[in-house]
Image (cartoon, rainbow, N blue to C red):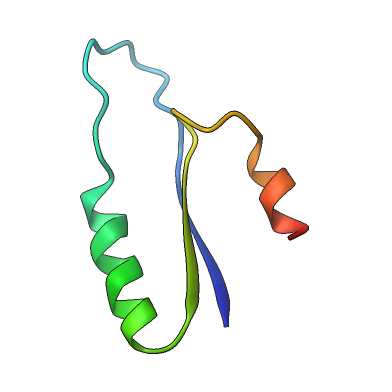
Length: 55
């Protein structure tokens, strides 16, 4: 199964970006179970999520 785990862009200003570690743990477990996983982090991506849904 192909899975996209998405982290939304924060609307609150912060001088630090966070790394979505929780999504990383979920992605690792899903990959070990044989799934094709992508992590989408809206705060750093150049394209909207919809761009990746068509792939």
